[in-house]
Amino acid sequence: MTLAMAPSSTSNSARAMHRSAACGTLGRASVPRAVRAASRLAPARAVSEDVVQMATGFGAVVGGGAVARFVQGATDPEVRRQQMADEAGGDELRSVGDYFSGEGFQRWRRIYDDEAEDVNKVQKDIREGHAKTIDIALEWFGQDLDGVTVCDAGCGTGSLTIPLALRGAQVSASDISAPMAEEAGRRYEAAAQGRQGCVQPNFEAKDLERLSGSYDTVACLDVMIHYPDSKMEGMVGHLASMAQNRMIISFAPKTPYYSFLKRVGELFPGKSKATRAYLHAEEDVERALVSEGFRVVKRDMTATNFYFSRILEAVRV
Image (cartoon, rainbow, N blue to C red; front, side, top):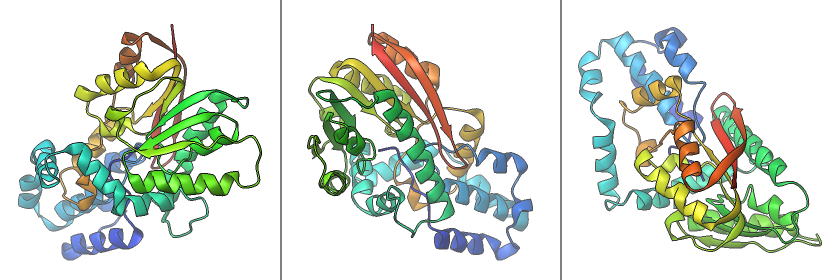
């Protein structure tokens, strides 16, 4: 699952706009050009109210002279995020699990449902971007998967697990959110109905640190966004310990534009900040793979207006 801060609904965005417009209407001209450009480089599951709140904040500063409020908000975001984690019991993983088991589950279930119509343009864009990343991974897996064992770590609602199982792969799928794993199971049952040669995946609610086993391929898409640099290497190492032959992972790449957007967005509070969103430099991820005895053989990028994800395939050497 990627994600950290889910996209807000259109109505929520409108209310935020109205609140910031107390000193004048917030329009396109109120937002600096660099900010507008940066908003097009948001990573998987990390785009959200950050974009709206950032624009809202700039509108308040530029249009209303709320400089004091801006300066007051310009504190270290990690301090505020830590306070939010403390409110969730001091466990960051628990705060992620709580989010994707509640409000986040309802939101992302709709985003990952191609037939759901109650999504806004940003959510639809993220849906399309995520689907493109899945398509890349499926192309790398190939069609003949009979007997191939796969670990789908952070399976979400089964976007990758289900087509792999329908191709004959034996998939162990897990997600930190029990509702997500259960939804993935329901979607598999619906997709496999009347089909021959399918292998029932094993769906379970479990965080990455507690996964075990040995698999031909370990896949982990749009999950690294929940892990800071200090824990990324350990996460890659743990996943690598379960991969006999290959790993396929995706992450939100660290770019100057989105790093700027993310930093500015963090200056303005909102409930979407219930989980952190971490970006990772591609060279750092590749270095972690190499240290575990893997070599990157394929790489690709998915970039839409509000989804930005780098995907790598690495084989054991």
